Image (tube, rainbow, N blue to C red):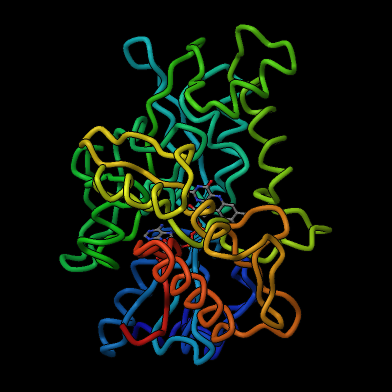
Length: 355
Ligand SMILES: Cc1cc2nc3c(=O)[nH]c(=O)nc-3n(C[C@H](O)[C@H](O)[C@H](O)COP(=O)(O)OP(=O)(O)OC[C@H]3O[C@@H](n4cnc5c(N)ncnc54)[C@H](O)[C@@H]3O)c2cc1C
């Protein structure tokens, strides 16, 4: 009988060590899935008992409540990478449990363009479609051509094209429209061998300029992105005081153009950073809003504070609990709302909190 086998889940497993923030309580049940049959068995086990199931990748975009979760948590450990030539492109397919940055390095080493700006992002491949991972002017939505997923409603493995993923800025159907329904098993990215890398981001262009790189290869871009990210504590480094975070805790706020004008006026700064969105709205820098609302990098409330190197990252220090992280994030949100009337949206996924 399922659940009586050697694959019976572990019970009461602490999740904090699996999360980059290093806070939060236990999973009531836990399975380390190194292959797809283990995942399918785990789903069957949970469904037979009316227990919910959640999927854990690298825990780098996750805030687990101190009380933990009353569900089965399945950690995605499936590995494997395959590449296939296809009409002038390479279709690179990786299993959900492959570490993301190693996959980027794999592509960059071969001169395959398309993922280079996404260097240095923690976590696993299977999570990249969830919030349409993006950085430095690139998002996975530009290259994802196929996602294989276990549909937990039908119990079937399905294939979705990139257009079926509902990708938007730090969002997808997996994150907001149907959260928890699909377990992503593998992702295929369409890359261009010998292609020119994307350099759309001013800070990245400046960095390449400073290095004297006129016609950058994907490897040049990776090197600059990693250097810039390191300077902001946006790569995880064991010796870094800012290492316990989820990266950006808030997405950049997207507002109507008139609203952006009003915010600039409130701030008394016509040079406020702003970027036009294709739909006519305007993306604001949430880091800038936070700093202008009165926070400085490194500000702390006890064991939780802003990163000393980036105002968007909320950092947990020794003794921090999930409740402290939430309280600090709420304070930041309230200050920005009070000062500018803009509501910040948290980026990580919250587990075990009341909606
Ligand atoms: C220092 C730092 C820098 C960061 N920089 C960036 C950045 O530049 N850009 C960016 O977009 N993000 C960034 N992040 C956030 C994070 O790394 C990414 O969102 C990453 O893709 C999360 O991967 P993960 O495997 O850790 O997911 P987890 O945190 O384990 O999970 C996140 C969510 O995805 C779900 N999920 C995970 N795997 C699967 C799967 N196989 N199937 C279905 N659901 C799944 C989980 O259930 C959860 O809801 C950063 C984080 C840190 C700590």
